[in-house]
Length: 253
Image (tube, rainbow, N blue to C red; front, side):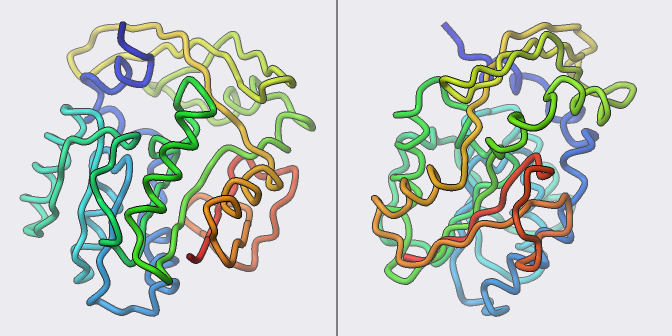
């Protein structure tokens, strides 16, 4: 049986590119470049690259990048966009739980819940982190975003989704946050690229900063920094608060 994240991205690439949460690419890539010290010789792996927005933008800026995703439809769109932009990106259909790379990349990025936090068990989510770590060279860097577990303790996830919903985009309904598992269970209603209306039962894992720190320490990262993740404006100046829906993690091996 297909998981919800597989069904969601089956035929949703064009519509996905119009969603509000994917509009911050330029500012996010500015932050990534800063973290790399603008060294164009460094190799980057984009895990859960989707339609390739970060990978293509970074390739335009002169970086060598590999993008992996589980969804064939998202990757077809990514390849089309790379061709239009006249850049080369090594896009591959790979499950993030089974990455084949060892000590190959200077930077791994997993942005906008690129696989991590979408999996149905904590063990699978951890497997993605482990694989991303294994893909890194020594002294490599991991930059990723994940849902901030502090947010639902102080706010209604349902109200948050209602506040950011816009016409034509996916709508989250029936949200219920489980404080024992830190998972939000909801129903996503959306129209795919062919105009078919779909309803999917989804659940996503929220993490608190101390959990992320512990997971990364167990993977032997030497330096772990956690910030608030502002759409299109990632910054080391943004201290994580209970107001942030997502957090941004920068870890060094």
